[in-house]
Image (cartoon, rainbow, N blue to C red; front, side, top):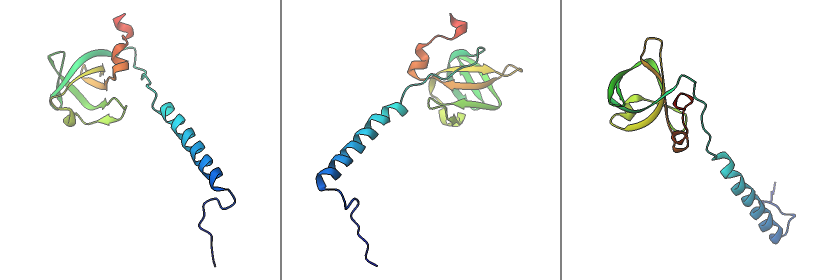
Length: 123
């Protein structure tokens, strides 16, 4: 069986180039839409601090020693979970929520856009 390998045999070369250019333009225009900066919704009880992970689960919030709760979640700027061990020694601006026992339970590493906004408790 003999098959033709031409992608669009019924179109002229000029039309194929225009079709390729149009497709590339549409793909190029749609890329910034997916890269838009979104501000994550934070709980009303969230607080803001500068966090340094010293020796997990020990952290410092604004220079004061604190402890991460068992099962604490740290979300990076891309909202994916990060391990506290990968953040040792870094100074990060974060929003955080405490567990009922007073330990730091949820942490969000802030983007520049999120850091520029004030929390409802800071108004």
